[in-house]
Length: 272
Image (cartoon, rainbow, N blue to C red; front, side):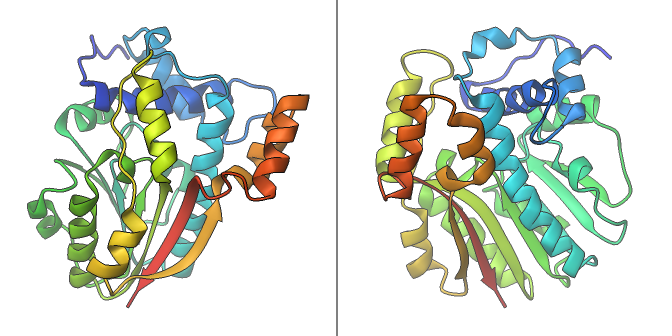
């Protein structure tokens, strides 16, 4: 299925980068995520993925991140199958197909119209699954979602791309609208956000990243309580796959000792 030429902004192209990392993983003999739907989507898209200059190791780092957040998603859906899942900034991620929730789950993928249009051309419909084509920070779209059920919010690779006050306001609206729920997402430290932002200007897709969300949530969204904080750089799949040389092995040992341990975190918040 040809999709026609792709025209996206630099920020929207990050969705292509994450898709490509997962597709590369799917083509390996021992995949982490095994996202064959992502692999098929890359074949079908009329786009030169080499122009993205995806960094080395993305075929490991991106699937590891997705696999960990998939695990938290499955935990919530298994415990509360009659729930709402809000997959914010879904991009071209295939989480709904990987998790394969029961039909009782009402799953919404939310992203900008250009990306939702691509999703509609690439991925099949399924029961209980809806795509919403809007900015996640637009307050109006939440009115389209039933609010009488537990909610899981998944925001992989999103919050660092959106100004922190806007993310906090969105999370505040969600805690006010739903009876209870979990919010799972990844964050960067201020130093990491700065380094990645500057590095992206040297090649690939330029980005401007934000930090400081956990501190903002503590004061502006008091309904949220931190349930889990996992240092991404300590995830076993990441460490075992990337510790293949003297330098990388020494780096991950330093991480375990505290160096940059909290530079990237996977967070799970709860409310209600």
